[in-house]
View 1 (cartoon, rainbow, N blue to C red):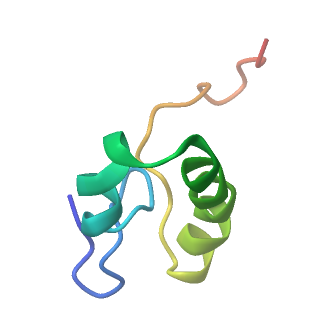
View 2 (tube, helix red, strand yellow):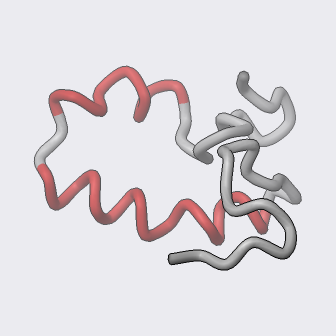
Length: 60
């Protein structure tokens, strides 16, 4: 799902054009975008909907 205000995916923080081109991008371009995702999400006031460790669970 795309946030209408920020135009970022609620789950991953990518834009629709990035999602559409993802499979055709060079590895370096994907890595650059992935490095930006946490700050994009934070700046847009979004929290990732992607599953993560449950509260109190230890990450391994």
